[in-house]
Image (cartoon, rainbow, N blue to C red; front, top):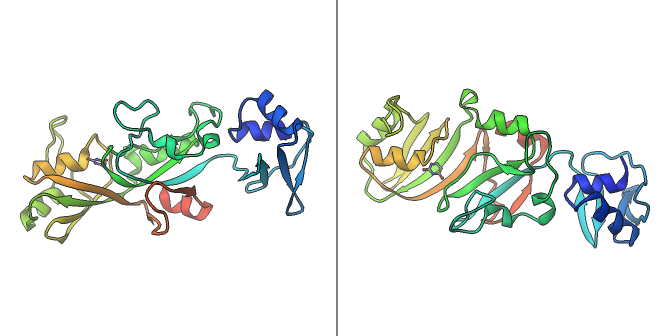
Length: 244
Ligand code: URA
């Protein structure tokens, strides 16, 4: 693959911009484990996952597809065109936001959405089949939510969430795959589908009210403790298996 195409695929601008960056000496490439200057935009490279290069001093690993984990803080909308709050995508580096479109997927996208005031685990990728697999109701990927309630929880509320409640957009009851009261105002709820405001509406349907919502796990992968709110990191291939 030509160096200019590698940079383009990783979101460093149009091919013309990438060629310019290379020709002006702003790019270094990994050779035998070390970064070395390269000013040939057409240099042919046998690129593989994790191979490193740097652009204007910023070191970047090559990834054919981007798989990213973000700890969403409160106060961000999961939209490229937010209406009231900053876009979650502003938390990612520009090159991740600018990766070119792959087949039907318009660059890096969040897999499902969290509300503006919800915190926690979010996966972003430009892998169309993965987005489909993780979002499809057929695949039932479980998602665990830590819910803080306004009023004290009781056993009847937990039972009703497990048995199923009817929401206003469908007569078919929706039920929690798992539900436990961790403390008087802390509910741990597992859902395998992702309807609009589902946790808040389910908790309201049993007569309580959500005052705090945090997604702590997707599939078999918990949100890593080391990932602070607002931080992102690459997802490893082993973690990817746990997620879907
Ligand atoms: N359910 C909600 O009500 N809000 C979220 O952000 C996620 C699940």
